[in-house]
Image 1 (tube, rainbow, N blue to C red):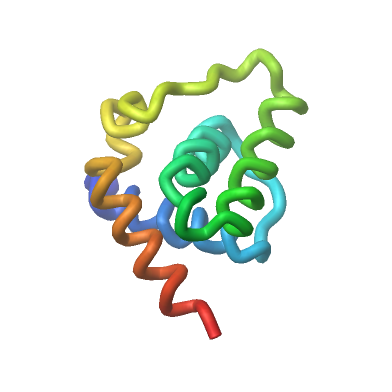
Image 2 (image 1 turned 90 degrees about the vertical axis):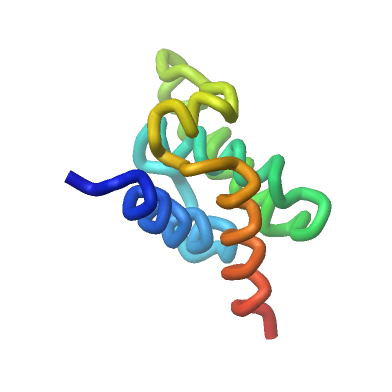
Length: 100
């Protein structure tokens, strides 16, 4: 079983791919909720990437209206993220390294 940091690392990588446009749509509610929260965390510094994340989340929830949109704190409670500020900082770092 993966620990919280390993899960977070996997989700960070996936979220960066969505933000960069390499992946278009979330595969499940966890990914969709993560995209939605990441979009909010990034929108002031990375508006284009935030828009891609929000689009991915929205597409998933449109196709799966029965799925629940979780509050950001619930992503931490579910142990998908260690903390929101930590996830934001790591995602910003990854995206800065990808800029040309």
